[in-house]
Length: 394
Image (cartoon, rainbow, N blue to C red):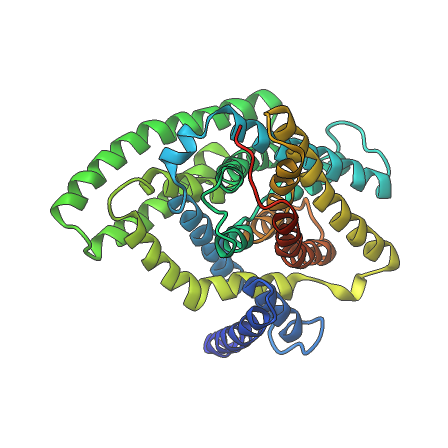
């Protein structure tokens, strides 16, 4: 392939991704869904005008690291620390129940797998995908109804943040256990060591950034250095601890989320992500999705995956909310609010594909879950709030 052909591929990806992204937004669907559809259309499944290359794979990897860095920057650490045990328990249920249900679903279709086998980790990974929560659509819906600052809205937001942190930790363990050269003790030790390293380095970096930020506020060197730290943590996580690079990027974002210019860093990262790396990442999912091999069994699995994905969040988060003292209809609101999936589910799926835990054909199920949950969540929330407008205090 001629080196200059990459410019043609990038131009096609960006134009198609943006067009279909805007079209999806007009249809009240997440923009990322349109970008994935764009990848399907221009990829080998349909038009075949763009092929997946090593360069595009590397660009997509930068894109996913940027997305996770931005997610970390968007974390309200103070809110996360003060939410208390209720949001934490709800988040734990929002991870545990979908994880177990997803693994059982996979085994139900493809047979029970012995503990520690390749198939066992594939089954667990399907559950890991279901643990992800994306509350951007829920937040927008609650904001429109004036309920975001209520007890239920605050609980959903806090639980979703904790949910993603726990989900990333679970992902780290699953990928570590899957490596045939590793053993459970080594995985646990490496994971603990990485987080100890992150806490120590994070403390140092945070205080250095506070000094630099106060001396040179709102200058371009702040986001540049911040992005460099993101890349360093991504590299260190993979190279020295055997942990997913996206975990390192997420931790780097959390380290910087409380400095004065965290929003300024996030804005600059969003420009890069919005213009190039984000569309390339989401379109690359479409490029990798192989609909030629979609069988009736895969379609049935996708349908079951969607149903299980939605119900697992409602049941898990709803039941624990009830145990935490919420009333019945508020428990249902929390469960429904936690059931949306988005970028994190795609990021987790992408990582599973890169390490051999997920086949490209299963991206169909993940995309379907994102579309269905994104459409159903605001509709059900509006119905629930119309019928039960008041929120009970706990």
